Length: 453
Image (cartoon, rainbow, N blue to C red):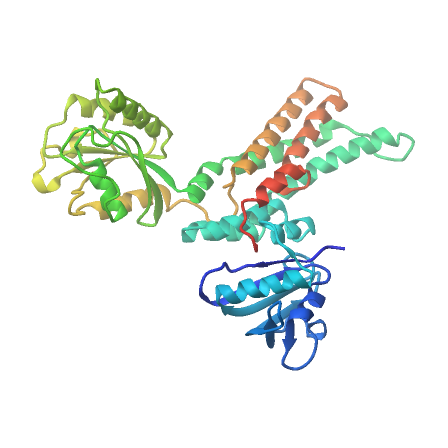
């Protein structure tokens, strides 16, 4: 028997509608204690999935809202258990009083993510789908939402489960032969499974290759703005952010540490990192900022090199350009176009060179187009790519174990030795889907959720 939990699932803020959710074996009986339907019937007798109008009462028996309740019977619910929802007017006072009344009637407060955790434990979704629920809630772009929705719908699960099942079947066959030698079971020969292992390894490698795109889709593009002091890096960040996020002065070295701001540039979400001007300096604090600038540049998905187009390139500019050329994605921004251009595109060894004026916004539309071509146009958002670091790590370990098993086959190792690696691969794949994940990891995953989901 599953105890009944309750929570406000729409947040305690003023809104048109607020929803209190319960799930558990006796949720309808508890609801009868605080809700009276206008038709006089108890909620336990209400039609399945049918909204019923009635009165919601507080702990003192006072009517605090005229609302609708809906009773949905297991197993065709989000959690796989009986559920009741109260669709109230969105007053925080009403929702708090209604929730308190349910607690007194016998419901327990829901923990973070407990509704989705029950859905996972009751087999309504696997762990990739459960983790995608919080990604969908936290999505701040349409692409991120579309990808998370695809994962909730099982797009990633459909790619991963066949690999897990192949590994499980391989282990099961081996142990069947080992434990029941007198039974009429086909002899176990690892060479018969080599093709399966190779095909699954290739499929898993293909999935692993999507993580770079998935990380950007989920977290945004880390874009480091670099250049020597006083070329307009902070002005560029302010222009893209739409407000004065960073102090801008004529004094070189004003920015002494990295400053971050998330903005939408075209249809791409950039995590802009305004860096300290890169130059040789005797100032100890500024020197620390320069080192952090170089570190941010090394870790960035995109480097935006900014120079002052109204002045000839300096040795400092050229030194920074040399650092940029090692990056796969780099754009040169020739700033201060309103002052006349001395620096020409041919002076800069970049694939993309754009003249801008950070103060007026000139050229920023061209920057948006360039960024979209780099990152937005070629990224699938159907839920089939890896976006989760935990899932990526488990898939990586599974892939490495499968390679080790194939290597053992080539070396002629005995089946029991090869099976050690196959079992390790299966264990790692099970962590992705939740088939073998440890309880402490599961608890940590659902702690990311809000109460009520």
